[in-house]
Amino acid sequence: ITLEQLFSHTSGLPADGEGCVAQPFDSLQRCAREILARPLIAAPGQAFAYGSQSMQVAGAMAERATGLAWDDLFRREVAGPLGLVASDYAAGSDRPGYVSLPNPRIDGGMRSSLADYSRIVAMWAADGRVGQAIYLRPDTLRAMERDRTQGLPRLQVPPGATIYPGYGYGFGFWTLPTARAGRPTVYASPGAFGFTPW
Image (cartoon, rainbow, N blue to C red):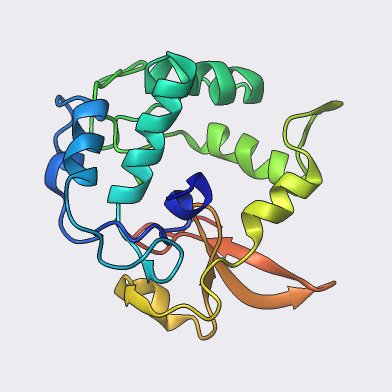
């Protein structure tokens, strides 16, 4: 199972149910072990099954690779460089300030302000730039945008995604087949919680 497969829901990991992903006071590492102990539903890279399990494992991999907790990694690699001041992985919490959880929900667990979200969208629209600095290279963004589901059976798909004919999935978001200059121009996430960012 590769990191690419984990972030595109093509890892073969089960996609059903919430399990440990819905337990924020568990441990991300323990949750990943629980997910990996279950049998695969398909060979890695051979099917698309949308669900939170694969991204939870990817988050645990990031923790192990860096030696940092997810929240510390998020603050260092994302919030700091992008200037996010009101974003964390405590969706559903109404506590003010940064809320750190031992088992943050990697997919769909981020809460943010409109101002912070606009910084992320602005970086993407500027082809990976934040001011004069390159945050993500354009080829990295294109790799993230590429549909990883082409030709694969779709074992689990949220109902919201099927309203878009020809939809696909990149790294953490849906790709819609509106094309300009050979690239999809609409990326969205009409999945888990009914919110559709554009």
